[in-house]
Amino acid sequence: MAIGPRCRLENIRVRRLSQIKLGACNALTEGCWLWPIEAEQNSYRIVKGEHNYFNHGVMTDPFGRIESGSHNVCGSVVYRIDSEWSKFAN
Image (tube, rainbow, N blue to C red):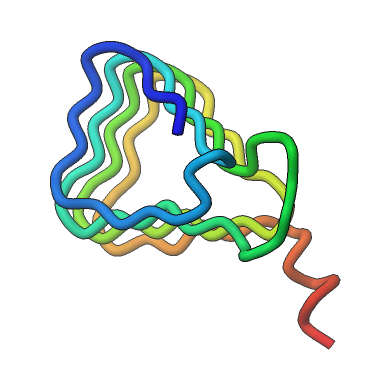
């Protein structure tokens, strides 16, 4: 997992660490999940820019790639999934 400086990660759950990149000064509060699909990939599936805040219980669950820019706030108990999911739904 690539983590920029001054990030605050409070009791979060992650898998597939090689597919996750966090920029500087991100905060993920307790109960957040960074949960890329269990499939091999040589690039990042989850990319978060800088100075983002993801509140309690936010789940980022990409099948392809989810990228968050910088200076974002995401509220409590939000499920973030990308459009690639439709390829696996059938």
